[in-house]
Image 1: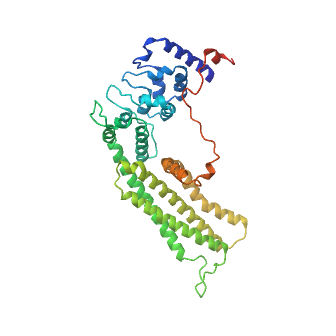
Image 2 (image 1 turned 30 degrees about the horizontal axis):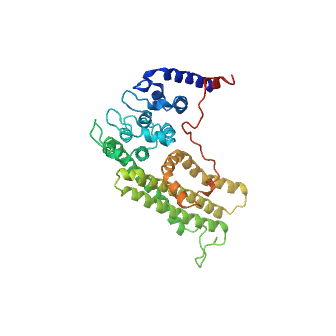
Image 3 (image 1 turned 180 degrees about the vertical axis):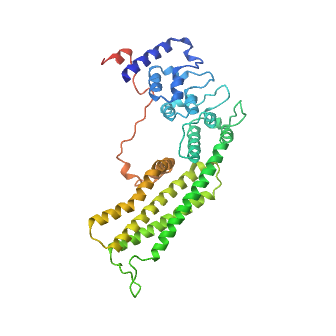
Length: 364
């Protein structure tokens, strides 16, 4: 079926190539429609068959790279960026409103498919997108003002993301306050548990279960839970004391939230493990069924918490992708298990040979 679609696409490309007006303003060209809707396969095949489609402009004098950035089509953006010569040539494009590629990022009118995990992550994605495109354009283009608003790209970005910034500030404050309250509660419990020795003490003040393996395990888990919860409190409090400007949402706040959530999860898990060790010490039963039921009861809240917050946590982990890459570059041992992982190969424009129509029919 996909091969049949490629045949139709090939014929459409050939017909469009015969049109002498295809290299001028073409508002309804299928290439722009596919780019707006993010159909990577169609864009890739059209550019492979007809490379001159890269010179097409729409009714607003935008090239395909303008459109991909405007509609936040990252796959198509990376497809064009994979060929340095083409991306460098297209990065000089300016539309009829004086918009550079960076102005397309600043205009968030068509931003509707971002992260669904909160305004802070949405703003973080926009800031990352701005930084990614800024590296592509000539350096002096960042100072150019558009004809419509008379602003640079950065000024336009700050102006058009004011509401998103306010929403992100409120969301980050509420999230940090809620999580810090939970972390303080966990720290209170584990701190009290450290002075309430399971099984009590003898006349000399020595714990009765001092030489039991579960007692040592309880002590270690209690210390880990206390250290993790208090550190997470510090992370969340540092968020509440930040300035909440654009730069904070670019790097600082997402990383602090990620580390805070990680430590909070470890503290909850360590607390439940300490609880299980305490119960096993008190029950003193050698039955495997009893130990199994206690282990299930201990891990059940942690499992529910992990399942409910996994997508949210994964989104925050994605936001720290940059710092993890930097750590792998600076510390060769960091991420060593990933050395043998197969790297995803990106498509490169014009790496594939030109295909004739007869090649499409082969195999039918």
